[in-house]
Image (cartoon, rainbow, N blue to C red):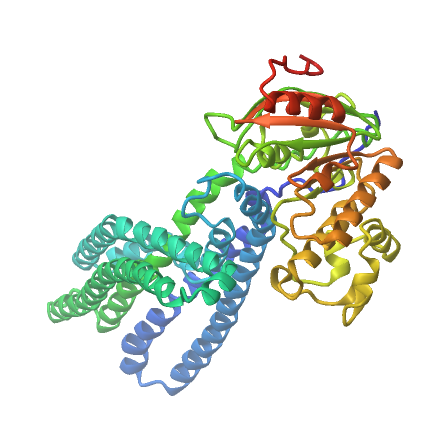
Amino acid sequence: MTRQVTTGRPAAVDIRRALLLPGTALVVTSLVSNLLMLAGPLFMLQIYDRVLASRSMPTLVALTVMICALYAYYAVLEAIRARMSMRAANIVDGALSGRLFAASVRFKLIPGALGNVDPVREGDTLRQFVSGNGPLALLDLPWMPIYLTIVFLMHPLLGWLALGGAVAIVALAIANELSSRGPAQKASSAQGARQRYIDDARSNAEAIVGMGMMADIERRRAVLNRDVLAAQLLAGDRTSAFSAIIKALRFLLQSAVLAVGAYLVIQGDLTGGLMIAASVITSRALAPVDQIVGQWRGFIAARLAYDRIRKILPKDNDGARETRLPLPGQKLSANQLAIGPRGAKVALVNGISFELVAGDALGIIGASGSGKSSLVRGLVGAWPTLSGALRLDGALLAHYDPSQIGGIVGYLPQQVDLFEGTVAENIARFRHDMTAEAVIAAARSADVHDMINSLPNGYDTPIGEQGDLLSAGQRQRIGLARALYGDPFLIVLDEPNSNLDAEGDAAVSKAIASARARGGIVVVVAHRPSAIASVDQLLLLQKGRQVSFGPKKDVLDHIAKAASGENVRPIKVSGQ
């Protein structure tokens, strides 16, 4: 066993540590920006109480030049703040997007794991919020008591009036949060349901068009769309109502401060400049609350997204390991395996025990629904082992670093899904270190080299979304070449010839023989007799349980005797 630091995937970035520097810079720029907001009221104060009283033109010019310079600096600072918030959003994206994408892919294998959650979309929601005006309003909010204190210093009566208005506005903001939380959650849930339905419809476009289902599918989509619009409308109506009330109250409060200030000026307790300055500062003190309410839908969406991300990522353990084992090359053993989807209470396949050595080929047979595909999903790690153990050269598959799995396992699932890209990229599994030699070698092993060369651009031919520019047989044979790429030790083929003609059958048999000859282990789920022609071991499943395992001839004889009505004893299973 060799020991080295894992290089396949970097450790997850600590978001808080990554945001420390830009966050600190944002706080500092917000401090300076809010100090500059006092320039306007001070300018008004000087104009009313000094310039108008003295009628001094030099003072007016000096103050005007000064305020222009300060506002120019404020404009630059606000632009910097906006750019910094967008870069902070990119840091969040860099820390989360890769992990969320991996979670989105892996959780697709877990029935009901995501519910209405799309991890990638949740990350986008959080990033968009961080890059917007919402966080800037939050950074301005702590200045509200400072501005109110300044108003108190101008005159206590004005201070109490401004404080009362602030309390009323904050109370309305809290009421807005409580009233809009439920509708916002319903809107998010409805959006997720609609998007999943649209994705399913796009994946089944051929069946929808071919069987005239478009009108009925659209009718159901329209119902889901109405649910989304109704939930969004309710949430939007409540938020906009509170926003309008808060804005009107803020304007009213500003006017009330002017009215009370005018009374104090008449009484001789305040100057005209202080009256104007108090009105402007009060308005500025309450502006962040107004902005936050205006951004409330974004706040709620970001908070819900963050809560869901916190629940997703702890489950999304990529299994990166510091100690990397050498790739297996000797045997595969299963001992009392029980396999099912992650989170399942009952295993779909139970009591699986066998042992294969390098060069063996195992055929898995059984009636439809007997658990064949469930078993192979467990063999490649797509589904977890609920109990028992599956070992490669004595080590659990989970003990290998994820970056090594591609060199260990080749898998051809029952439904071959290719990706938008070229033929070569699909065969090479989109590896960044792909080589033409390895791609062509895999294609030759799958006996698909000549077919690929007949395509318009050969190996560089784009295959379209999900390979829809290819026939089912072409997709299956390219999927076989993908499974063989890099000469993996364990090759698992789930009904590899279901869409193939006689030539394709021969190609599968040749690929199995070639893999065995180089010391690989091949596991084949078979319905056609031709699929088990090249295997030497058979495993018979019935209702999710292993009935027989052993040499092909012995298992076939056992099946024949059982079918004839003879009393036979099950073949002794290796490892039991």
